[in-house]
Length: 160
Image (cartoon, rainbow, N blue to C red; front, side, top):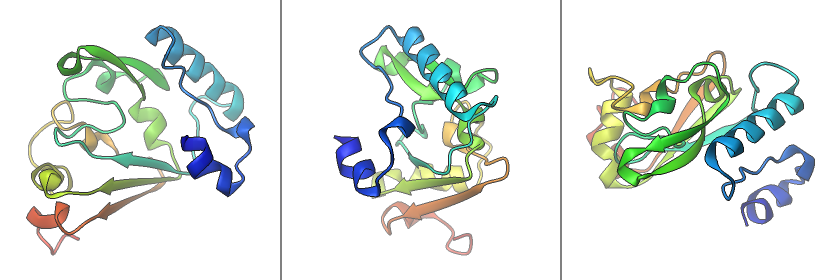
């Protein structure tokens, strides 16, 4: 469905689209995904043109949840991340892969995200382990926040 509605209209070749095999054993799915990306990009870390992210009410992004093991992974592109509060594995790109993108865009909607958005953007003393979205720091690309009025409700408007 995502391919049909978002990618096909842009005429992105199917050979440039890599689906996570969520039906597979989690570690095998992460390993296969990483292998595909390494082969396609022919380098250590992929350089995506664009990564679109959301922000969870708990500060998670991608499937990097607070205090989950993949937050600290530095030697992988993809990870099978055990998320205790969901009692399940989630497949995710690591910060290394995300932060190597040319452009990263966060889309944040809703007043229920206002407090956590303030903490992420305006920089509280909370560590990345508690607010994983703070770990999104492009190496040389751009970071853009698309925020609706309700989500921006607690921001110091001098910072936006």
